[in-house]
Amino acid sequence: MKLNAGIITSKIAETKAFYTKTLGFGVTFENEFYLLLHTPGREAEISFLLPEHTSQQPLFHKPFTGQGVFLTIEVKDVDKLYRDLKKKGAEIKIELRDEPWGDRHFAIVDPNGIGIDLVKYAPAEQK
Image (cartoon, rainbow, N blue to C red; front, side, top):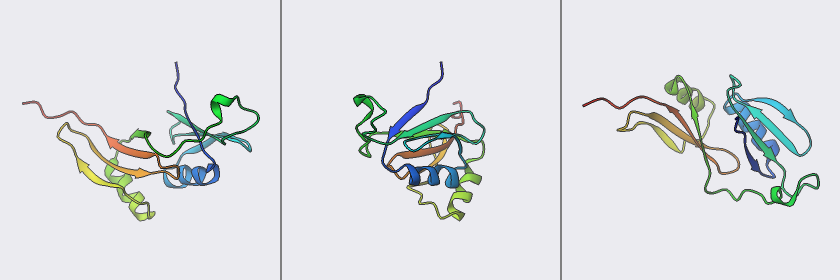
């Protein structure tokens, strides 16, 4: 089984620019109403669809309203990514931090209001 999350949004162009320029995603497929992106190593994909498109069934018409969704992207070097995004002028919503359970992460928000948690997972210290 393979999961591809999809977001219905009118901000297709802004979304494409954000994910490709800010996070280095590639375009797997696109047309006038649909955008399928992949992570830099092609480990995962995410799709975006225009709302109310006549080619789609009513279930896939209503746009995302900007709340209640987040993405977690695991990276090998979260410190480097943090520095790179700061240099690009990305707005950091949660500054780089270490959590008691061992994770090191920071967060940004995409043009649709989706929080993106960029994380390096690490096991908590054994006591």
